[in-house]
Image (tube, rainbow, N blue to C red; front, side, top):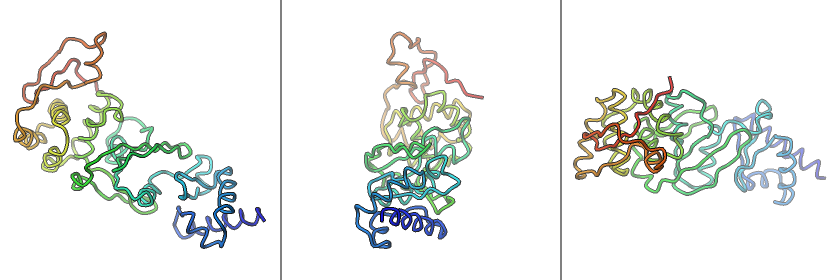
Length: 275
């Protein structure tokens, strides 16, 4: 009986793939197969052990196509939109992953980074690690969220402008100031100056200051004028460190090499780009 249930679930999963679908919920499978939750869980667990099924959240399943069996999961881009819809949360693929999607990266991105309106635990999905970063004011940055086609539908990603701001807003996700500068050196060509200025008012002033300094340093001064005007309308900004982590380490932090009066940024070490 268990074998029949497992075979039935495997056939159901295969039929979804043939229709171009890669996900299903427990409720959908129970209704289609006419089985109870316990029987479904038993059959699903066996398919998971064969790397034919992924269960990133309770009650939500991702079918693993044969070509991705050795990976243990298809790419997160195939199912992130439906997963977040199942979670009932606003989201966008962001940070280094979004920069990569915009063509700005010099190295492989190890995490599939998602910004979400709710704090969510990370997901190990086969070889992939999906990591969530919290943003409370998702509606405020709606203008910086775009739809991107995927192999199975669409997903939401941050625009180049929002990505640039986020790289400075979430330093723990950005692999250090050198990597941020390297990514911005390519991403700058994709940024819309007016959108950057409009979005900049939604983030903390030091984030804007650091980004403005880096873009100027990288030769993207044409982008920063509107953003500087928007910052000045918010009142005089206090001086801020370019790299807060470096400045906090008294054994490492050198004396400032530069004080950028335009952005009121203290630079203790010039960022090094990965060529």
